[in-house]
Image (tube, rainbow, N blue to C red; front, top):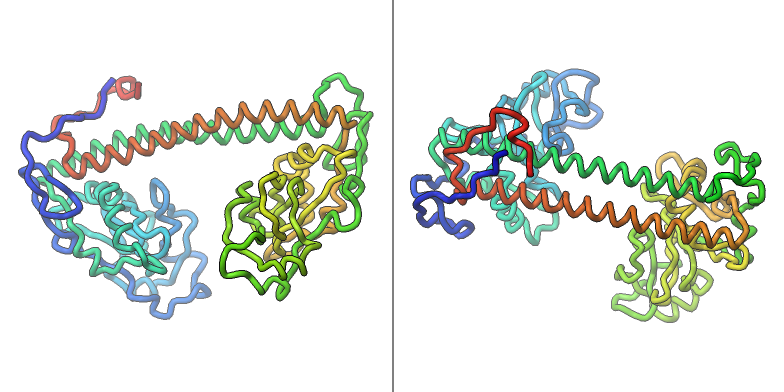
Length: 465
């Protein structure tokens, strides 16, 4: 069982850059432009998406280089004529790719193989060593916290972050002897692969917990807690059998009536937003998705709030998101929520609490089997959406009130256990990611001396304690 080296180099000297205190005495200082060519597509040269072809020359975009390895499967293709226009960015094995636009600026990957001729779009810069930088070392150097922090500082305050090629060429780079660079790259490849494997196992566990959680909810709210209860056909194809003493009702029959199922106002009715915080909030999808009803900076003047009173949100109301990828998220409005109204992306439901436990219905709609029905009834091909009619007609399988309370108590305890286990795994992932980042930065900035490191001869020796 081998632990990564932790010993420093024998002697250090000042690095000569404000971002880094010191370097091993025998390492050189340089800049990226002195050690590499830095090339990027000069605009799009009029290239449009409709010019993509079914097969041809691989045309990589930012999503293709986000992962641990470059995704050459889900790519666009361009013609040979378009490929030939930019010979300076025809990719070669050993090229380091860095995104230079938008929120993913600084994302880095290494070309380890090429399934065919490939190039990049205008959001990606291609770094190619002149010979004094090992490509594996350069890749690890660019993924380090040191470089990523420099990039973050450079793009701070920009509306749309962007790294110009001139900026990249000025980047400081530490240059150990070439043989030592190769050793650092091998060390980091080996150690980060071990950590990545542990991270993947924890992420698989989180996914499994999520599936199990969903199954526990779905079973409890469709079959109940008594495995010996007599069953009957619900009359609903996707619901199947339910306990014989349960009732199947449309949601509208367990609300307070009137405007109990209400969608927020559209268009000009909401144009008079207050410029400063007031006592009256405008609630939207961000509150329902997160469950945080304190967040958000949209406010209404009192007079505007009074005109929109029918859309008012009260503690205890149930709200659903009605549009986009997060359609069907469902929350109960907490007691400390400020007075306010819902926007047009939100549906509010007021339940008759003598007929239904709203915590149970919220679980049904947010996490349980009603997601199936909600998604089946989405309207609109481009941007799916729900409306009040869809929600009012949702079918609920409802036990007697005492049994509803029993199911909610059972699920609350079960979900707390799932939440605790998920948080533990998420915490392990975070610690492993921090350990990985620290190891990379320590190696490429000379904090640890890996010259004497050797990969274990057997997998058994390489297991992490």
